[in-house]
Image (cartoon, rainbow, N blue to C red; front, side, top):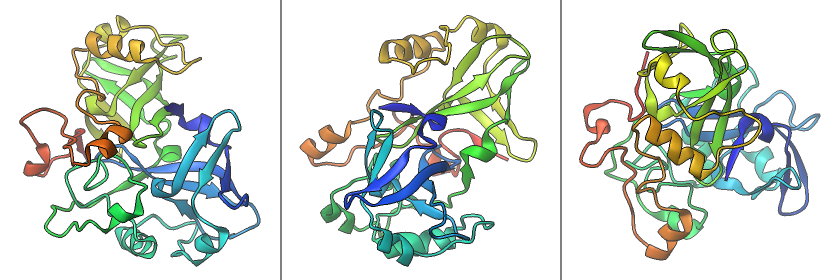
Length: 284
């Protein structure tokens, strides 16, 4: 299911023991796959002075009707987890300690979106699969809050800024950036897939996309009032002559039924990871 990041922000966090953990504050995603690696919880007066991070491995369900997310962790487990000060960035050293504490499979070892798998596997028996010998990469995390406002630069100028993110809560991949184009194209919004990003200059707060203004203006209309349907997505990708992310990407239930690993490569027969490049564009 697709959800806007701003919609999920403010959802209550409930665990399976009916304890209220807090509310969703924001998300950390990696700038290689543009996939959410942690939900940041606002815990109010509980666990003050530290960031409370929850991995998608612990997210059991997103309930839009109840506006909550079910978490497979008790308050005690969160209290005992590795602590990160509120003003500190998420280092790889912290991530290693965090993943080691909970026993999660590392997402940075292996060639799929989640290491050995294309989605966060919830079957703990499969967590024991070894990633020894798998090629690892060094993740760099960004927050949805800090990237909001980044300018979108296309071939012939700027078109607007990042207003929001559309997240797939099965894989926790960011499927689209919602771009507010009011200074260039008043009253309009457009969707940009992270797969279409050529590079990002984090210092300049600019996202570079290899598209022209004219092509973007002729894209299927998106109002931002509702989420894109699959028919809309098919039309959008056809307009830009891009392959849909759903093509060749197995659903979680299909993966489990088949009981085998399936690669999550962007283009058949190619793999930018072999050349040390990000599959979703370069970063500066």
